[in-house]
Length: 208
Image (cartoon, rainbow, N blue to C red):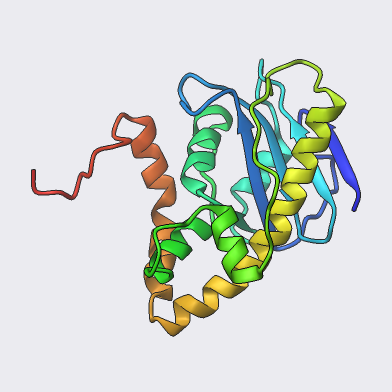
């Protein structure tokens, strides 16, 4: 595995292929308040690319082009959060999207455990021992430990996300819910926009 750190944007000419797994690091869990700091990407080939964004400008034209490229499928776990952060800070609508958490909730209805570790343990027999840690991702210079962690986390994510997508797709097809899943994935940019506009916890489809 080769790990790459990029300042500000993806390098020119980098081709990550038609399916890219993506994760992000922010200063916290409130997209309006907490800035987007780092975006990790991988095509599943064992290489990870970590982009440390310039938080003064958020100028990252190649990353933004990838996020909105209709020919590149972006895989996330809990895409709603990352997509909202990209809308807020990069001013981009991410599409098309695949979310392993949504897929899991639609086909693994026998459980309420849909965290990445839980899905990976059951479907791939892989125990993800490390846990995401708190860190100051807004620092001008990331420490070696932060870089290693971000890269390793992205690499493990992408290996699992690509494999999980294959497993979950089979389950969705078996249960006749693949079309439901796709419609949910298509709705994610709108769901993220609703979060940003002040409806993060309101069920707008409810009667009351």
